[in-house]
Length: 218
Image (cartoon, rainbow, N blue to C red; front, top):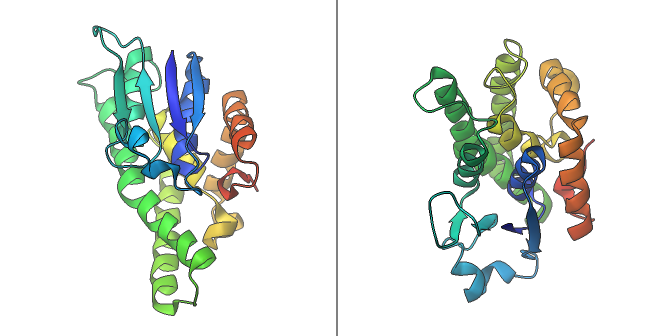
């Protein structure tokens, strides 16, 4: 059994998608970040950084004690390796390509797009400089992804944890992007939206917090 400490944000949804794709037994333990529950000591004993998502695997391979992990990229790698799916074998070029795009998502997509959403939606006063800078970076990131998807059906070639990491963060209406300008992203997004595991992950997210903006699949 895997405990998923979670809120249905872009980062939380990544892990829900992979767990659904793998068919692993898990239970959702909501951490309401809108109410500050991520600051509670009990949660921070699991997630030292005080951020969702985090997991506790009660049956890790080769270990007696349960294993807790935080940071979405680390969790994706761990779960995919444990199941032997959606992440190629160690020592292969294919694995490194998945890692390349996973780290691109972790290091660029989430930081810039989340800050853009924050300034657009929650700043008490308009911040023209920040909005211009972040909107420009959002357009650049969409361009990077568009070029890649013009070459391959999924970001690392085959469907992988890299696609699962990126998909929940492509929220064009919140990020001021028009998917008609990015036809390869639009086609990739439609293919992923049709996957039953992704549909289940989003449905479970709505069971936790219907109004979360990351759950909208325009």
